[in-house]
Image 1 (cartoon, rainbow, N blue to C red):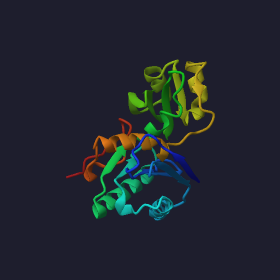
Image 2: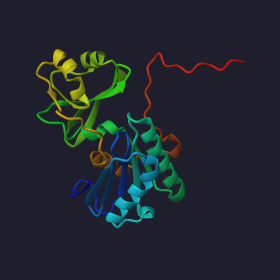
Image 3: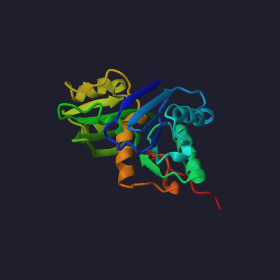
Image 4: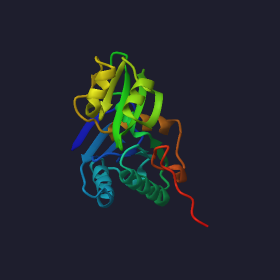
Length: 237
């Protein structure tokens, strides 16, 4: 799916590509000439198709990859394989062309579209093993403030400790509708699953670009959270 729209948030000369690959849907966004182009595709093997998708979007925007001003990557949490592929591709492009890198938590993309009536946004995704990924954001005056950084917890603990009556629930929150309504009967919950989106990350990528908040290649890694009881066993001597 291709979307085009005008963007007044970034200066016309900035050319930024965003890769968001934390979910089953690969999402790419390109800003060029003050126009935002987006591409969303579902691949059975993103490893083989990511570069082809990037080339296709760049060709639509008539932008040469070497002319990009920055390359931003959503670092999750989410599909660890998808995130590793995105980070590896970005590092490879950086190594070959020296294009600056920007890292962004994937959940940031959901803060603006779901923020209304002065409410906070609670993003929840199923992490399996009876755990969830959750974070709470406050979006005000074109800025997202992190109230609760991404956590890996049981849904009940997350809801009671970090959410409240004034939260709008998104992500995979509909999957936990019963648990949410039990604690917050009047909660506003997205009716469908809403995945992180490259276009939603673009305003944050733009701000980091103009503030020169770049990520060193060695520091570009997926946001990986694991349970407290998941430990690496020491090797036997």
